[in-house]
Image (cartoon, rainbow over the protein chains, first blue to last red):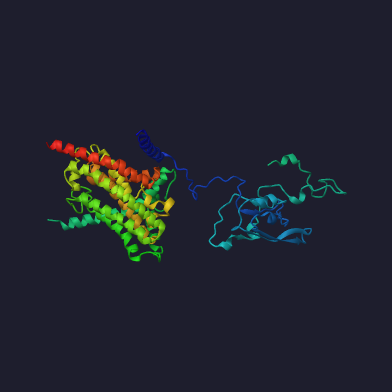
Length: 180
Length: 318
């Protein structure tokens, strides 16, 4: 009998607790009007960035393509005769219908060229529109690293020069400043 | 002498109002469930999302109306109509205000009980005609449920009938001018409301259409407007349950200051909200629990209630 009373009381108390929610503010973020805050390190759309001089950072090393767990990055390296025979990607293609936004490409990139940015609004009506070519990926900016220029960062010591002594080379980086 | 124009108008109002309300309830229920789950629910289409039902209706009309090849076609097609027809037929005896009733039958209560029993057939033969094991299990549960609630549904509202001394619903409302029957007939109210929930297949007694275990129960195979008919039928029976509870136990149209129709509508919406609140709160019972509860607890209580009420009525009559 006691059990029945507890049971009945619990049912009514439950009703009251749920009824009190009438006056609670909904937790919903009404998306298209209200935008959620996305942290700067949010892993969203992938872009190819440029160095501070406005040149492409990508050196077509294929590391992003190799690191990609779903093989959604395809590129072709070429040498640019106008710029010291430096390598650059002839084409650079990311299939966003495959991309899982894991950020492995960004981690693998030695030149900070490929970066994930806080943009997730990539819906398309046709699947083929999710394949981004180089002109879709390349942006006119430096992305998250404003002063980084791969070609100017101090390289290794050689017979002729010390670290950071070459032409257009910056002095070596204090590794303790590279904390995340 | 029947005033035909008055009757025709009443029929139009009850039919149109009932069906519109049933359609709107789909939206009301989703909004209220949203409120009680701290979210918004459908709020995009129209002011506050109130045109959502219209959009649902357009969608459901343009959907493919598929009849499974293994189904019993004739029965399969006729079933959804039975739900809506029986629910709408019951509205004929619902007195909304004085002289505002389609058919003021002197056996109104019995007519309502008969129609609600007939509505159960649609569930049973619908699940049978679908020839699908989940639908069939839903029907089996509906039968088990029917056997348990139908008995105490009739018994628990007999108290109100005894006190009013009439099977006519208008007379029952009129008898509550000074005191609502919920006070002397609290047990009867609880029993009737519970049976009504089971009859409308609402939580916590929605075992025949338990989504979690039976896909959609007896209407698993239904699509398009046939499914829509089941849906409308369910909401019609929710409205009917609220209306009957108000009429039998909460004084129908009686209330101070406001016109009778407004009082009736207010009370009815209160009960509709309560039914939705119950859905937002309570879990589903197992159907053996409903059977045990129905036969071993509510049925004896309803009988005792009836006995005591009868005794009191006889004693008062001298």
